[in-house]
Image 1 (cartoon, rainbow, N blue to C red):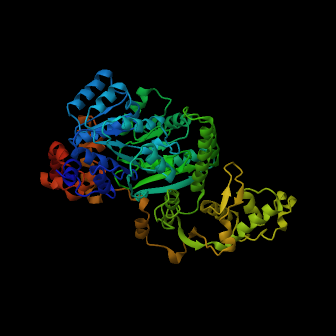
Image 2 (image 1 turned 180 degrees about the vertical axis):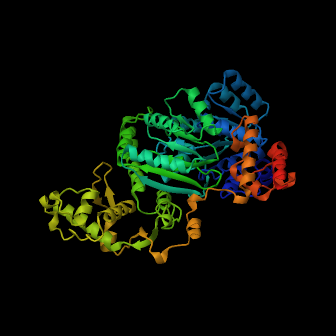
Image 3 (image 1 turned 180 degrees about the horizontal axis):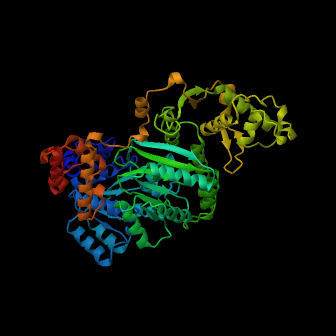
Length: 629
């Protein structure tokens, strides 16, 4: 068999996604490889296909028990022999897996990094044919990554002990340049083929809603959940206390919610996670302890109740929505108080006891800098998608036409977006900051500068004689709110720097001179009211506002789609696996649209492999035939 036959037979696809084939070819040729591919891009196929073509057994190093169980369940459903080794196994089960591995029973074994250098596992590994080692969530090896795990540093030691060095493949969804460098060095990748497919998840809708106080935030949350009453989603909170209280509130309102954080007993965490995975609970309220590698394909929204500590974490957590490619919402509820909480958590974190005091301080300084970028994302008046992609070093258009700042509730609420040249307002703001800091050896906050520029009669401004500046009142016509938006935009672009405390003191950066003296132009997306002449037909508005289009099927196929989902739920319960392991929503939608009535026709549906067609195909065909008749 070749890679294409494997892809079709076991995974039900006829073509590879972007980047997959290059990664597979490198690993099959014995080349180390580093894959930076967004969540839902099919990273696992990149090492599962080579594992089925190479002799011996492939080791997959994975950080979480739940991730291993999900991956192995999915492989077994597809007819691929696989097993996992972690602390959830009793000693007898552990040695039974090793015995089966020695007999060649498995093609893939998932193993926790802590197990690699144990005596019993090393004895097996040193005598087994292991052509490939795949490192999942590879960013965990870097202390600059958002999920640093010291156990990942054992991987290079394990590889060095092997009598014949296996090919190494490293995979992650989010990694800055610093983290990529660490992955190459700390995993000792040998001249790796690097595949970076891009960070954009075009099916995800991003938005930030600014809140004032707990009552306002909860009211916003309840509205968001009511709009998504038939969908599954994750609600992330920054502390265990917030998880507990919010989960209780949601349950009191009659919602099927469960909870997850590191302070819960192991058995309760396991049960709550299974309730969410198996759709017994529609909403998971959790800290960031939940979710890495969770392969639940029908998560259609992720709401952050509090601001995450960095954009890497935010993008990875938000990316747990829409894994099957269907539209999904990623919404962050932002308040200034949450920034102070996040800063406190960073300054008082002692998660990694293996770091020296000096290293710990370096990590904290880096974390505070990343928190600042996270808050700039929340405050930007520009395109959210562009901000995220720019953070990861990727260029993007000024407007994505699919985020809260670019579309949002824009057309529906009588608002349109327009890209405008704001070079002159930018020059006025930067000139004001320059003049104020020349007058005094310190600077002022965002709100204070907005008052100066709009000519406020503030007593403090008069006391400091800032009303004598040539820039005092120079932007009176724009108003304080718009001037603050301009300032936030200049901060996000790096022409101004803001302190990360509650006062947000701003100063000029070196690049400010580009605007002031070297003719650099600045543009910004503006939200403007729609005039009667610009009013779009309702149908056009509905088409443009893509975030409301979460239906995978046409109205005429919706009934069949629901019947197929009911059958899938029944079969999944019988097999003891999550529904999406049987077939994803996207695959069911394709069945509803194409209506296959024979085994061969069913195999033409993307996501239907031979094993699943043989196991489940007859029952799905019966439902489709009954519907068409």
